[in-house]
Image (cartoon, rainbow, N blue to C red):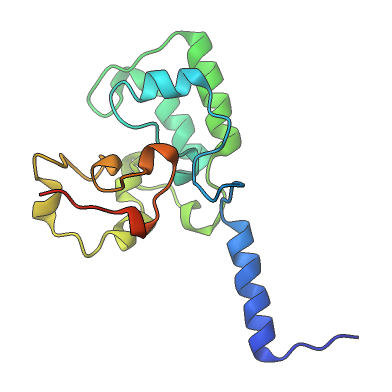
Length: 157
């Protein structure tokens, strides 16, 4: 029988935790297969957010309320809604940091988002080059590819 020293056990536990987070083959947060309708319709107004950023219940509410989507009418054809909603349900976040349903189902109001961006001054979000916390690609230069690595962050003036 193999015995583990506390440091080995801690390493194994941290590896297990890393493996339970969303991980795709290339290390990015956007699944490799994204429905064209999701890319086209959602990125017409904002970036097509990685579905793992919200739990399934949040995505379900968002998709059933497209006629009042954060102050806009983002209604789609029923077949499009069905296709996108189904995909979002299967790809939604299930790991620890997104188990909670954020206020108003907003990614930017989730505890993990607030924690990750706690050093960003409120005035930064108001810059015309950024236009708000929901505009990930303004600072995360590879966000459209699902890469939110801190090494690729460039905060515009």
